[in-house]
Length: 409
Image (cartoon, rainbow, N blue to C red; front, side, top):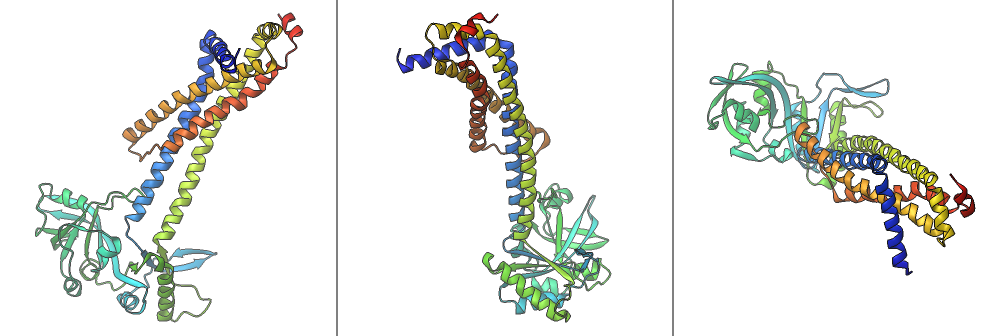
């Protein structure tokens, strides 16, 4: 008998043994199905969430730096005091004296119920400067952004996010229309392109942008303090340098002594991305652990069933070895049975994982992405589980004494 014929014969005998006990084989395969399905689904959820968060962070704009006011150190932790220490002069100084900075936008924020005709909508209103669209890399869908003259004169003009525009003007035609924010009339001069949700799940399009001077003078009781300063570095590689220049400038303007804490805090897009990546990695590790446990349970199930099979077929093994079968033939037979069970379970598990991923995406609205790598990994893991957990029962079968096996009842 040639080597190929021997392999075919062993495979045929193994398949016959598997089909002889259909229910037991099904229950054995079920553990692998659940394990592989979990791997596919968990990896799809983690991958989709990671890409969605990264895309959301990138949508903030390129070379993005945020400067927040009122940060102090208490008990070793940096916290916000709620008292703003940022001014319009700070924003102007950053733009004039920091060579690594390309764009600067003073910012403020409030929220209000906005009215347009018979429609109304509760949203946030952000005060910004003319550089804001360049910092946020946010283009106009309709109309134009307000001008530097609008900022200097605190003009009552507004740019709507897509969500707000659709809510207040469901029939379209928002340009040139009047909306009322805290009973103050504003003229709509533009509508922003849709950006979708942020990394925190918030709708970025649910916003109104107005000159920060208008917000401070007409909506916030003549406040002169800024809530944030947005900065765009001249190049991505210059973000750390820009942050260093800004820190040195603001400390100088506040006459802070060496060793004295900053009364402001900066965050870059890179830092936000790093924090989000750490969260995703933790999330992925947790999901991967659950999937690994499922596969481990499935592997133990295969080993248990194969041990039972060896015990039940002791006499059969003795007869085969008595008529000339070698230990390696018996080892191959039981090992092939274990691998076949694993591969069948892996194939069904891949289908179950794809189906589960689609159901989750459609029903829960989660970002889910199945990659070829995750499918290959799950299928390969199933094969390895069959070899690993099937080897001990197969080796035990191959080591049986033919005479003792023939006597077994």
